[in-house]
Image (cartoon, rainbow, N blue to C red; front, side, top):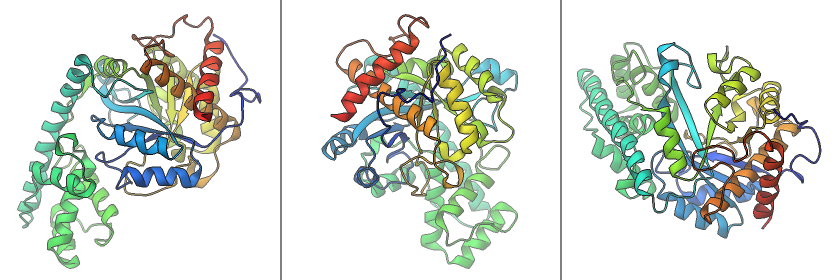
Length: 404
């Protein structure tokens, strides 16, 4: 395997510019109410490249692309999928969900075949949407039963939850894929509209079996508590997740023209998950899954741990990117920072910029019918022989695109 020194000044052929390769936009659950809000925030922070990684519908990407380009922000398109690695689930090994063995989040970077979807891409995506929709509908029903037993008939249904998203974001109904956070929000907003603060506290006390910890006038905290107390494993509203397999998720990313990417927790949980116990172990396991890209959400990490994992991955020839998710109602800055607001180490920042450039070049190439960083099977043409040269070539090409 090639090894490089990521502290070299010429790593990314230029000074890194602010970038973010992972946010969620409505109708996904998001900190943003509109695409315009996200783009305006990117402009205000000087973000040069902004990537969206929505779950299970990409209709919003056309508007995102138009608005971002008009504002001088380069749009990067991606996806996020939840899947199951069955052999690791059977072995009880945790990947990048610390609570669920075998459950894996996987992203696709630089996707371009989403408007329109290919027949294969549409079929793979519909399977995921169908499984997810059935689970969300059953979860809403169970929560409604919990609150009915506590003395409150909410009237919340799958249809009313979808309508809440449509009304809030102006999204077409068929593009809405409900998430757990949407459901918690629908119930919380129903309580807030129909109950006094004291009545809501009494209702939640009956439903939880203990007094709520979150103040009832704090909508986000109350929504989060509804999720944790009533929607997670072992709680009354929980519905077992029905995942597609890892290969299904990977094939969808490739059908979309993307680069499969591993979202990394590192010290976001302590101790680290079985899959990520050391940087070296993680590198080997990611390579075994035939994945050549990894991503961090630095706000979860200490600067020291972030740097250790990022450098280990880049030395192994893995593309590395960074984002913020913005998948809660907390409107944090778009510029990635480490835990507690500490700045991202300079060596990691250069690598993240290089990664954004590689993703930009890959997406542009595949959209034009050319060979991307990985081929349609998700493999690097040439294997490991010229990995460093390939990374630098794509980074230079992507930097020219972003500079333009």
